[in-house]
Length: 487
Image (cartoon, rainbow, N blue to C red; front, side, top):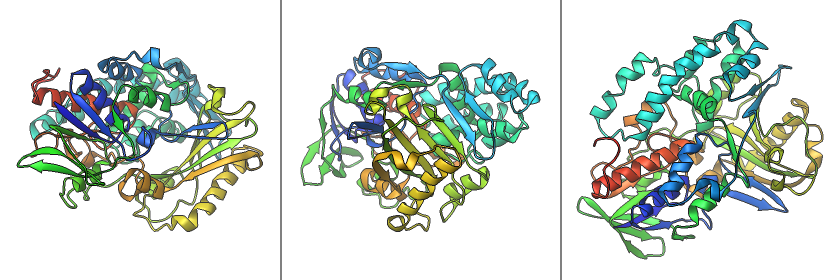
């Protein structure tokens, strides 16, 4: 069976590995000059930066993905467990919060702010355990293709109170505002507003405690390289359209006019653009894209104090900031940033004595009224000044030797991301499960999707679990293998 995979992002690579492992003839078509998509890499003057995801969780999902393609994860890459996973610092708070993968240590961190809240940590994790097991593990590893499969989720969501807003769920256990923020912000990792996403995303906290947080030597891109190595990938190859014959796909047409015939097409393109490749006009535009990001990739001539491998820097007006970047029309007045400093674990990511920093500021996507060509330099100055003055990263500006910058325009230009979104479809209740673009495209045989915008969602584990679901659907539809779940 001939399979064409559009896009060499993590989802496309994972699906391709699984299908190749089942004996399919797979070709991956990537418009850029290397693999990874949003999980790509920049190298410059001895500095290395991951451009996208940087925290690895649920490593067993990686192990399964590699094994399905005939690879041994631990032979291909070196994983290191992070301790703590990250540090949270607040602009108006002397205390910080180190998020560890131990309930006991989390209690100690919470106790800095509230002894009462510290006593509730166990209850909170106990409440998240069934949400993780029945939501992430059970529902996340099978397709939600029809009303029947969706309705089967509702009793669980109701019983576990997993359908209401995540922040409200956290607030039932904790009183201190800093503790509430520390246990509810995780949906921002996948582009979701914790005041609006369903509480099922609280499982992101539980899985970090259960399986820890990890780093791969060389960055997440080392995973991408290992996954790409055994695959046939044509780089610099842009797909213009997906060809159909009757009610099934027949191949793809490239931008240069070349036609490739195949039995199955798997799209790892931005899910809001796949319908355009299918000639379905504006069919999915009613879905709301996620927020975007402003990114600085900085190479410094010295190591800065005050940063962990992962550091979250939370400015004043936390709720207002999130509302602005997810629903606002302008840039936020305050700044909250995430800083990835991998040299704390992997010194090879920078020249000797130097530092390699990736600074991420959530911003509205291109539906907002921001003139990025004019605004980018001002935003850059605001971010650097804030890091120096508010969080005492003294001497940052004067230490910068190399700098790269991405705005929402880069997400649109590099990845075809609608409105320059950074995380695909926003993970609200009405854009999850059955209401999210499906793994198998309805009404067109041989057409499937993977990536952050499909079920179960964004983030490295979500994308890899989704690729497993998609590959299992393809295998079942073609009679190659029965899935672990019933169709």
